[in-house]
Length: 517
Image (cartoon, rainbow, N blue to C red; front, side, top):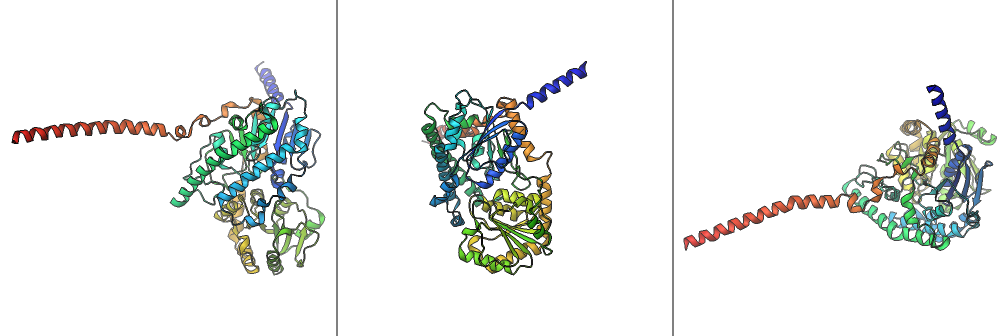
């Protein structure tokens, strides 16, 4: 009887856990690489039987019958028209200025999202339509959280393909000690010097100031403007977000404490390698000296590089004994050497899985870095903007790659750096070890992400995951009031004792004077 009762209980739990749900995903970041990262979760939730409605910058590839894509058409063209987003010229931009550019990018993205036809289609859904879960893009989707009230106030989860931004700690009450946790905009390790710790501390204060004085008021105003004054206020809705899934892992990123509502899911987009197209497979198979794979990602196109830099790169590649595979977005590469093969689009993660690939020359975007780590390929990083500087610095600290600044590229410097990585076996050895640590997990990161989405739905927003730190003022969180009270409690008796002693000694001195006189 007990066995049958347990079996019935398990079946009921299974049915409850796998009940199809309506999921709304608001993925408005104009980044093709982040689209790939997010699409992995979209597809996985749909394969679990959930009905997924996704507001997205590009159509989901091979969508199943239970995926509805509402595309924000023209998003990438809009971003490219903005002069301040000239990625090639951001290589020397200081972190504080980069942060301002990033937030400006967020504001303009939000405005464009609300004005877009895709958003208007979503807002035309019936008034009684309810979603069971809302998933938004942390860092640029907070302005859309006002939609929660429009669709039945479902629990919300953030997803951050952009590593682990500082403001996520602020939002979720996650510990962030600037003594050993570096801001992702700064190239510091977890062992900082005094000046680095000071810079990190002050920079975090500046980020908090901008978040409270600029970002929250802006997204609040944007939400009210397009959803009406009766919509939920984003700055208040942020406090109610159940969890956030961040694109980090302690094997590569510096270890740090996490509250239960902040979950590591680095590499959810990396899958088992698929068969390559016939021409690519033959090219890689026949590369007896090995292959150098060169790609600057999806946001910065190689065809837009300055002429002098392109010529330097071509001259260096022509002298390599290895073959070169270059993601080049135009029909013709002027001056293309015989050992170079180009492609407008290349299946990056599948190429990196080929055993003949010896070096990955990359812009050091986080997703490309993770793919390289997962496949075990050493890197040469040419960073341009955002977290790319930090990603290659981490790679260098792990001994799995070298850095070459874009402004320093010449034929000689590129050749020297390429040979330094390929000819030194320690880079390949270190990368194999790092790859093993990165992949060694109890379940795949995508399984982890799906589990937490369903967990939050099963437990009605999982409020028990919420850290009480979110309810504290800064002076309470830092125990400044307790320290002040303890200091006063200690100091006041000492001062009273000193005062009493002074009075006693003064009285005695007066009495002694009187006796002498």
